[in-house]
Length: 451
Image (cartoon, rainbow, N blue to C red; front, side, top):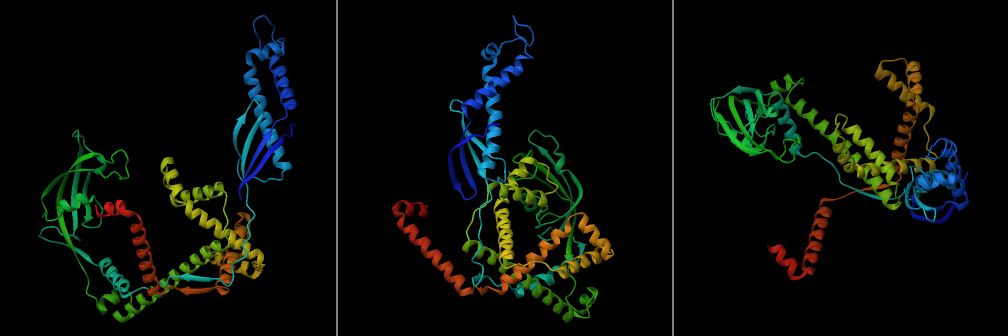
């Protein structure tokens, strides 16, 4: 088996190694001769009996193909042997480039897991944006409850924004052919909610029940059905009913209907829910800024194949019903930054856990199993058996370790809220920098700005 010779070794990135490998000439000639003799036994040429074709004659007719096969076989052998000799553990299939059949050389670019050290993760100053729900949020929650419990009643007037309309709708393309996708009867829409195209909503405003509206328009280019996007269409819409939403009075009776003692009890509950939600939002904000700061203090890169693989997983997870492979490929690109962030956060957690010897205790694992058993209404032993069988115990351990690491990092770092004045000052500074940048651009940029 050919071992191959490394002519050049280059570390292009912390996670990318480039090897230029030479296949020994003697090994190549032996492999060519071996293949020629093998094929000579089965190939029949004019003037020769089957199996009696001299290898030299065979090479004149099929030499290039035989040499290609010999090279490819030895490329595979030498690549695997060089990885073993160089003690390189690839995390993805290597990218073979610069193949030179004349000199019997090729280059292999290999992604490897870089050596990562997370050392600066304590006594850091983490800036974060405090989160709180204002009175506007409170009012919005109240209005949402009222709307959710309101009642639509028929009205004899022109349609206005916020009204519920019952319509029949049909559409034809530029050739006068029915567009089945838009055909609907007794369809309920609320004007202003975006259930139909904005142009159609605008055309319906001011019309009464019984009226028919015709409008020609171009289907938006970003419409979900690519075959119809950008097409010309003529819509015919008949307004069958117009209803308006009557909201219940905001009083004790309304609160009682919602299951509360009185209006004050309802408001108190909403306020508590908003406060709890704000705490969770702020905790998430702190955690995000914490990991961002740690990865800034301990910069490292990850192999692109790992990031793409994680992005692919996220795409499939969040878009389970999407079957169009081209759309999934585009979505995967959008998830690349999120995938990289998740992977880096996981590495930080693993490194901190290792450095600080943070591990799950048996009591913590048993508690999680018990919680699972109660949730699934199973006996604890049966739940444990199920979790062990499907490998979920490791997931439970990882979950515990992650929470313990996050708790450790929260305790050992300082969180500093960003004040409104500081945010405003930053905006002012950014604006001044932008102004200076424009001034430096000279008269040409000034003219462009005036235009």
